[in-house]
Amino acid sequence: MRGRVLMRAMFWTYTTLIAIGLTLYIVIGLMGQ
Amino acid sequence: MKRFLRDNGLSLFFLTIFLLALGFQTLAGWQDFNNSQLRHEGDALGYGRYLLSSEFGVAMLENWQSEYLQFALYITATVWFLQRGSPESKELDKAGGESDEEQKIGRHADEDSPLWARVGGLRTRVYSNSLLLLMGAIWLLSWLGQSITGRVVYNEERVEHHQSGLDYVQYLGSADFWERTLQNWQSEFLAVGSMAILAVYLRQRGSPESKPVGEAHHHTGVTG
Image (cartoon, rainbow over all chains, first blue to last red; front, side, top):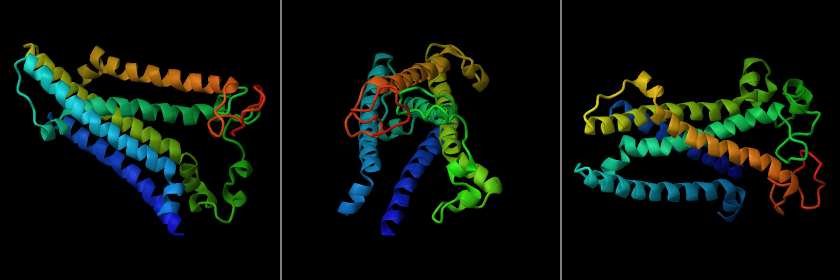
């Protein structure tokens, strides 16, 4: 059971990293920086 | 801990080398940018400022978009397109979305099938395409990010050369945008296409991306 929770944590680590990268640079580009 | 490492080795390994490569990309990109600024008598940027610049953003996102396009296309294309003998292909009579029974959907679901595979209706339709939906969304958003940051970088260069900047729609039609896009696409398409056909005849012992070493060349859809 704990193993499954940790698998989910890996899933969210990846998706969160991707979401941060996308949002950050779209905002930076929109600000013209 | 040992079990966590074993169970998640693949995603941990790639996460680690992703962060290392990205970290070194920021260092090399920063140095390259400042070298170019000095040549053009511009101001050098601090490391933190470079990290939050469109210069770094476009370099990162133009590669992201092509990778996610590659996977989104591969996920979709392999539903319908087959390759005799390839471990990347389904068996030759299985083209298409397959039956609910084969896909364990609705009343064919197992006890431990995901809820959205069991319930039917819209939720099951969404869940049936959820991998493609997410990979496709990441592709489109990173391509959007590439176009927005790419325009900022391109316009900075034009201003340095006393030219007027392009608006967003003009930039979407520019050679700069399409060269950045297509130079990444072509390499992905070649790598994926060659993988599909090379794996018909060549093997890597122990890899699920390969057929078993002794499998016949004409056998399709077998992974070792």
